[in-house]
Image (cartoon, rainbow, N blue to C red; front, top):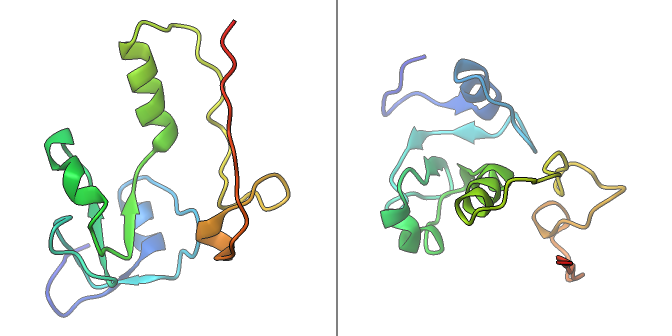
Length: 117
């Protein structure tokens, strides 16, 4: 797969090329890769270093990928916790189990809790 200013790729093609998978619409067309700072709705971007975290909230990218479970697991392990469970669910694709604003675009709310003993 080559990228140029005139080529467009489906998310499914990108995921297949890099050994990933798409949660959501795999037929979404991406026109180019962009930085967090410059990305627009037709771009894909990613967070590669924590020094760019401040740009994450302001990005206008239509699509970016973050394994939230992996990030949470890494942070919890760094805090010294060794027994970590969970991380196999997707709030976007599991409509029966989870609310997802990204999926449904409505005004319902969701809450989460952690109980330490």
